[in-house]
Length: 255
Image 1 (cartoon, one colour):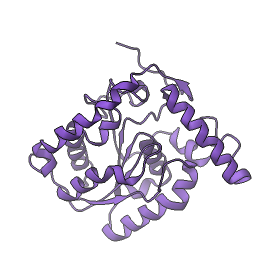
Image 2 (cartoon, rainbow, N blue to C red):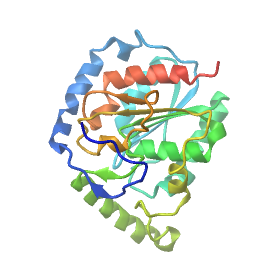
Image 3 (cartoon, rainbow, N blue to C red):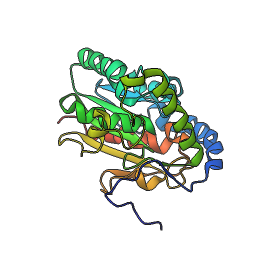
Image 4 (cartoon, rainbow, N blue to C red):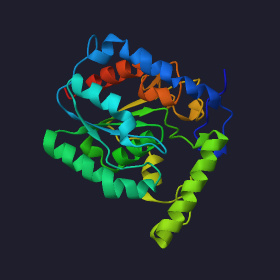
C-alpha cells in the first residue's frame, strides 16, 4: 500500500494515476439508476435543510443535476452553486457567486447549511466553511485534494492555461500567484486551517482515482474518511457515495 502523505502540503505536483480509467464513469451512472437508494429507499431522509453543491474543475452545476434531484427526493433543499464554469480564481468565485447562494439558502431554510463539493469544488467548500463557520453545518468532499494539488499531468497543464487566462483577464485584480498553491489569498489561508469545531467533516475518495492522488484527498481520521470503488468523475454519480452522503448529512443534523 502506498504511504500516506505527511502533514506538509505538496502543490502543483504530477501524480502517476490511471487517467484512462475515467472513461468507465458511465458504468457508475448506470449502477446509480439501478440502486434503490437513488429513489430514496433504504437511506436516511432529510429535514428540509439546505445543501449547496459545487462542481469540479472545468465543470458547471449542470453535471450535478443527478445529485441535486436526489437530494430533493430524500428531503433536503438543494442549491446549485451558481459559480458558472469552475475555471476562475476561487477567491472571486466565493465572493461574487457562492456567498450569494449561501446567503439565499440560509435565508430560505433558516438553518446552517451543508456544502458538498466534487474535486476542486470540495476544496472551495472547505475554504468557504472556514470563512463562514457559523453558517455551515457540514462539509462533504468528493475526491478533493485539499492537502495538495497532486494531479495527472494533463490536469496540471489545463490548470496552467486557466491560470494564465485569469491573470490576463484580471491583471492586478488578482495576486501574482493566483491559481497556484503559493497564493496568499483568503481562499488558501482558510483552506490550510483545520475546519472549525462544530462542522461535521466527510472526505470521500477512491484509490482508483485517475485524476488526482487519492492520498491527498483524506484527513487520516477514520471517522471522517470514506473509501469507495470507482472513478474520480464517477464520484458524482456513485451509488456508494450517495449512501454515505445520506448517512453523513443525517449525522450532522442538530440533535
